[in-house]
View 1: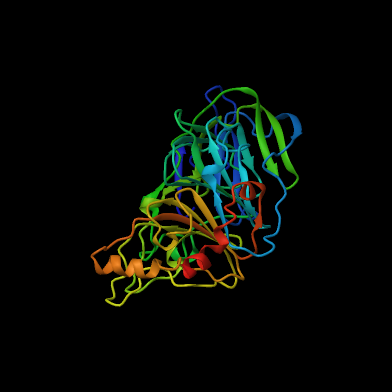
View 2: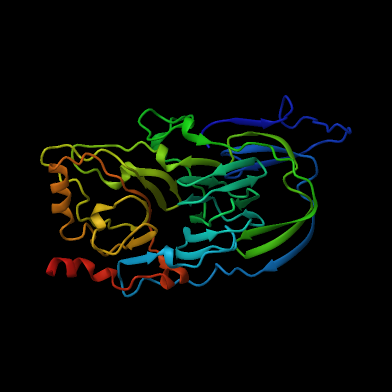
Length: 395
């Protein structure tokens, strides 16, 4: 995180004696990245955060094998066809993956167990519904359009609000996910040209100060999933400070960058991870040159696979393709993609007739290594999508 926060009670200096009301010492826990030479936070627990009483390996239903995209095809997955139910952790359904990132879908209607991902940071994007995110740092109330950024090693859980499942795109990195470096000053402040800033980020309310004994936490490491039981509840934190913590950012607070002619995807970048980027496509004024073509041109990102999650609105470039709200498309390297035939002319007519803005919202992930196809993606695939450009062009 690019700025410092304090929550709850902390002593005047780091690593000095900080005593509980009964005279005992609070237990420090330093959460630090990159060998403690990057962002960190210092948490103060009532009980030692090291006291475990049990460890058991558990299966991972979401860890099914992923297959190469071969023969090479553009793909369309309908997440709305995937089953609803389960929780935000064990209910993840794997869509796409490579050695840098796993992309899953969840339609959660139940609280999750306590969970710690020790392989990398996570970003969870909520398409609809709402949930309470609780962690050792405190809680965040999350709703539709929110990205929740969860640093590696954060013990947390998800509690959906009753009523409807929370549809979410889950992005699990093998490293850290951060704002793009070009948006930040040398000291970590968001710069004036950034499409969002510190005021748009919502940190945790807390601390929570939960109690309990023999409390189970699911831990993911590179060996798989383990259920560790802690002698005391991990949410026994009375205070913390630092620059490393979970936070929320709503996609509606992203400020689109507009040009006279169509701008390329990097203007939509929101986060960067190891060998991938996350972009936000939001409603914005259309390109305003009198001769502008207000729609993406055919393009081939020769170094990337492009995944797009269609969240809301009317995505003009995909008209006639079968893509709708809740759809995910994969346009891999090796395939030139662009608007459906007829979409360019329709967009120009709409611009000439006075349409001044777009209304679509979407989340895009570009990876710099090929994405493999997960079992949930294959189950939800529209097998006709690859041929829609040719059919429209010939009709």
